[in-house]
Image (cartoon, rainbow, N blue to C red; front, side, top):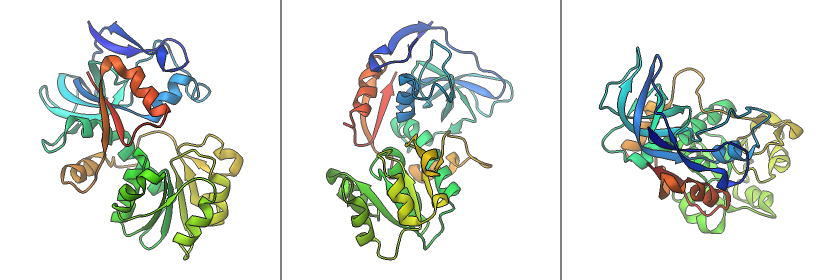
Length: 301
């Protein structure tokens, strides 16, 4: 037996419980890892609270978590890894656990800490995916709402590296952090659209909303085209004619190996705000819900 965090009903963070479970067996193409680090993502909270119940109803009990890094201890038929390998990737069946299953594991370079390795998976893939869906190209101007959040922070870096002019909406405390990435940071809140127009007199070509802060109507007005606005955080997207991008998988080739190389080489920063023992998963989610974090929260089983 091993331990994992589970929940058996929708509700607030305190529905999360540390329980005994049987370690999962890897199927074809899968590996089982002894988890060294598991990332806490906003989607974990939406699933736990029931916000995603209509889209993807839970089959209780649920082990939360989308991604992890650890050491392979069992290998399924045809899996591309060996026992003892250090790997990271998206989990099958949850990551808030001592043991987890990965499909398409990616080797973890020594230069990458366990915490950053686990944190990179969902935010990296999501950022790469939405930039591709928007079709943002060098020379265009991209507005990123929530530029200091985990996905926004990575998306800003990827966009700047591609020669895209980036404006990001942030809180006062994050202006310097986002400016240091090569973006123009503007304060969110009342009047944000006027501040963006002043910061980008050439106009805004595309908008990525990673904040879910009710900015879609004004974002469409800025670009003049619903097809040039995408959100990963605002469930009212359909009302505005805007795409809601969900999931962590890539169209075609997986971007994660390249993202790992960039992070290991210091060319992509994924800030880790705080680590927690597995038993404090409820506190980790509560901290994210209260927006206390400046970067990723990570569980260390």
